[in-house]
Image 1 (tube, rainbow, N blue to C red):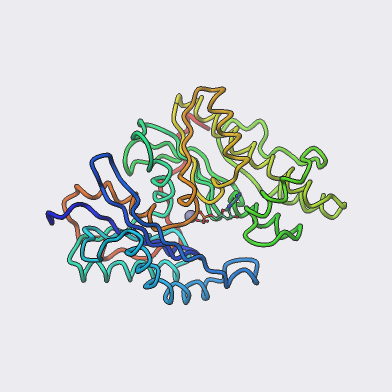
Image 2 (tube, helix red, strand yellow):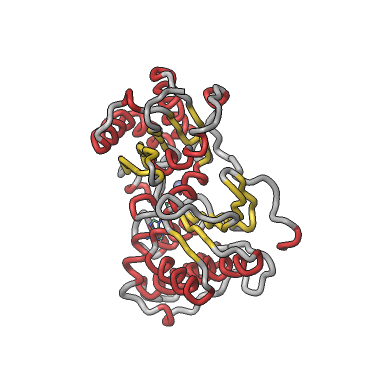
Length: 345
Ligand code: KG4
Ligand code: ZN
């Protein structure tokens, strides 16, 4: 290993954001020195991500995004001591761009390379600031592609507690926004529209009400929203009602799991963690149930490279391994194998 101070370069190209981040390890802990993200706008007119276009854009933007990150951090590429990139899950063509680029950088610099899991990045982003979290703790990942609740027993040790049975939370926000004509990406659009809406003006169902387990379901809610839309509900009221139900489901199920498993700390991350109503509801529950709930700092909510660098921190003291240079991009890649423990079902 080199004697240089630890500096991790992280790259994420799993979907439609080209993210390059730099994280230094200092006395007080990790510090995000740069978090450059190029958000592709070509997809807007399609109302969803076009995989082929995403790959092409990543190819074009990865170098400028790397340069932006180095400039923001005020460091040189030669100062980097470890390179990490997302191996999955995500769009294979998009993943391959960042993964291959990162391997090339590591090879050229003669430093170790680590291929990491996208969701581990999201979780690491939420734990980035403040005192290290006690283990075990819960981690709720809510993004455009995932709604997973994990029990985290240690660095890299995840057990699945619950997951969505159909749509991911962010996917549901995006679909409902499109159905009621609010545009893409739907999460921020619904959140804005909801400010001027009355949630009680539209009656929507409570998904999986009364379940013993800790799963999520959003497609019934989406269908109910569509029917209400056809029946003439105001988009603002629908946005407010949908958001209220989605937030309620996420917070209630996570809180029940925390109580059942006797966990005191929860991290909430992924794009939907940017939602203000969700943050407020979790903060309220945290007060009432004496829990600690942590969210990533603002710019680390949605996909980015800094979270990948943060998740690779645990490899800094690993003996160097070349195995990850062989890692392939994986569209489907579970973070924690197997179903939740039977005792929880
Ligand atoms: O983590 P992310 O950037 O990408 C994935 O890995 O999926 O998450 C993107 C998702 C989108 O579905 C977007 O609509 C949602 O996060 N999102 C939000 C908000 N901001 C982004 N959902 C609800 N409220 C928001 N403020
Ligand atoms: Zn993500």
